Length: 191
Image 1 (cartoon, rainbow, N blue to C red):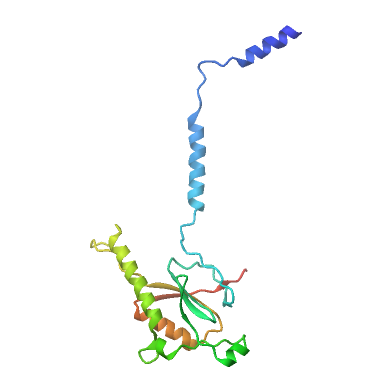
Image 2: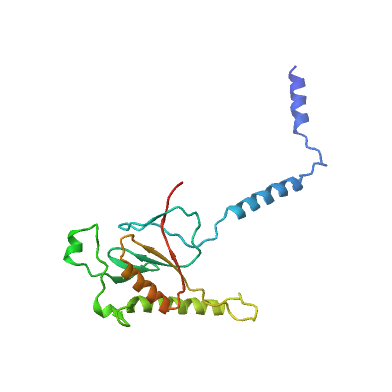
């Protein structure tokens, strides 16, 4: 009985010389995994997250905003591309009542008859110029072989308590800096 067991073990250890690894099935599996990963990969560079102290309006839309520059309007300040650009002047009433913040500017921060926010205009202009330089160095061209034009898309994440007049000044300033398309961001309501 013991000799039969030893012979079986020796027989199992022998590998035939004509054994070939089947690469076709392995390649099929790898291609399927690669296609799955490519389809599930998100190419958006924007990551819009909620800012503490800001109350966003609610929306039922499922459409995601396109890649764009990001402007945030909080009760305290305006932030453009993660850099605080300008701070609002808080009145005594606004400090006492946190439900109704005041979105007032200093007189020296406004020009063009109080419509354009000078510091924000400078920051938006620098961002536009930087985008134009990057597009001129890019290999992507239009039908005539010229660099792609500046698209002028701006995502605005504003507190729902922002006064229309303040939002109008921000949009006027962005329009003066050649930003023509505005996406007002809202919180997505789960359906």
